[in-house]
Image 1: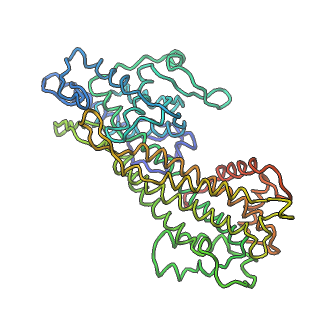
Image 2 (image 1 turned 120 degrees about the horizontal axis):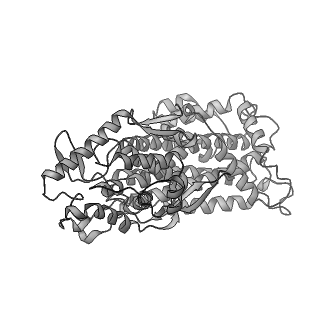
Image 3 (image 1 turned 90 degrees about the vertical axis):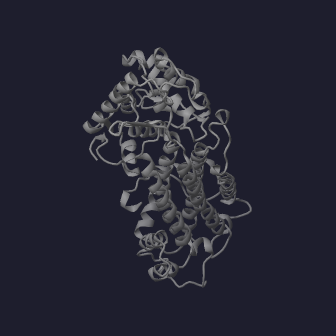
Length: 505
């Protein structure tokens, strides 16, 4: 990918977004998208000149106030009022990386020329994205149906010169500033919104979409890391490898299962540990069924990626403008049901990687197969790796609670007009937490697996030995009890720092 990505030339993929965000690639509107945006705005302006009939969100109130006609003199004020009144978010701030994806997804959705935004409005969002001027947005406030109203309102406040933003300082750290200060520094004028623009900005699935996209990017990496860490644990536990034979997986046929088994075979290639005679006939499920469990998660990731790829290349505001067909249609593309259900599904599948990881950790510290109890000399005097497993278990338990599907709930809002909502925003924020939790569970397993494999007389594969050597530069061998919480955090930092090529994921 070049250092500039042109919005509107091609469908945008999850991989594209990962590269744009991680490599700080600039974006710009393609010529074809520019033409579509201008044409759609001109169409609506002309339509308003010759048509005095009420058009939802254009010259009417919003939600249950849709029957209140607004005079032409108040249309700009109507759009400003919409944004100001809907900026009711609260709770923890949305992570900056999610905010940046959110802006990108909003730009993508508005670029199709069905939303009737001004080109100046879209260009301001692009400039915010490119200059890392990120609105302060809060996690709570969206029902995931009439668009992500509250979060998108906080995003849109910046266009009006209101709210707060996070900007990068000279040291590369984000600092919070009033938008009014940034407006002066950037020599920006507030955008004067025209008819429908406020609704185009607030209606849409970009808040839940951004959480889902970032969680997908992380989940693909976590899936492969689970295979690597699981393979190290298998070696440390002196596990058998015939359960990864291609034959057994080919007769079941699930793609994720086949891919996981292939990964484990590749990771173990050349292992001296595997060439030794085994005293045991079978391994516990947490080792023997790695392909089946990890593979099922891979299949869910693939399915959810398909759903999100469709969504992030869609128009999700309302009403939708079709200049060529001379139609303005009020519908419900802002409803987040496809995303809500998919993110609940993904949360469940990623949590399972944490479930099985913690079970492998438990096996490693249990004093089995020639390993010392709690993986430390003089157990009793030393507790060794006893309590990191407690920590992992507590996180696993929290994930089980977070896996209750948000999409199974709904609640009536807007005086009954919006009587079924997706709760996709809650699906997204809790999915993010599940993904974050599984990183920590895997970090604890890695810490235990690398500790345990040190007690083996023979070496593992070249890949695993190199991986362990790199890890040991961050986390030292545990000879006797010491403070372990810094080691756990170093282990988390280690797996977060690893970058894999797309073909591995």
